[in-house]
Length: 266
Ligand code: HEM
Image (cartoon, rainbow, N blue to C red):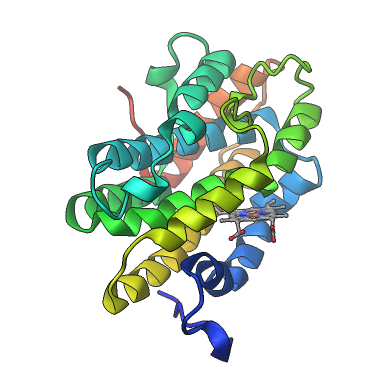
């Protein structure tokens, strides 16, 4: 795990929200620079890519929000618990149904890195709920920041209608101004009472949260590369329908990779 020590000598005594931003700065650059995110920013996200990403986001938010709900009265969680404003699980379910149809639960495919991320969230929810602050920060403030631009790119890249179908994940009906809400969220983070060791562990966990996201993007990218790598012995004839493209792609990836991947059929 990378060090969560900031290079800034003035960090001691700073608000948690400033310090967490400072210690995750480099990770943020690396997250933005993963191949998946670079393709995304260039408007090169394809339907199969986006469907796979949605499956992973579903698994991550399921774990995050179940643990936040279960620990909602924990003093470390109370200040940053905003289910009405922030919950993403319901919107991800809507989007998954939009892209996969009513049987979407049986079609979810989860790479190993996503599984590890969800396991980590459940572990800290059981053992050290205050660390959920680091994960909630990483995901929700990201969704309210760069995520808003990615929503517009997704709509354009996938040719989705302006009505918002398939784009619920990027929409926060309970948040009128993302910037003002982020300010409120930061002040709530700063009000969490932490011992010195808890604060240090939380900063480390924020770095770990970014790392887990990077690993998810890399895993998804590998799966997708495999599905399109025609030099590989598994040659995939891609059918015209995007949903069929996705299904065939995933089957090829599963058959080719075989290991290190977890497919959930519930
Ligand atoms: C294409 C990829 C991305 C772009 C273009 C992007 C862009 C941005 C931008 C413009 C901000 C606002 C910075 C500011 O207010 O100073 C931001 C903030 C943030 N982003 Fe990203 N981001 C991307 C990916 C990610 C990822 C993958 C994560 C984590 C999973 C993430 C987490 C965050 C967080 C937590 C913040 C809030 C920082 C703070 O104010 O403390 N971002 N991002």
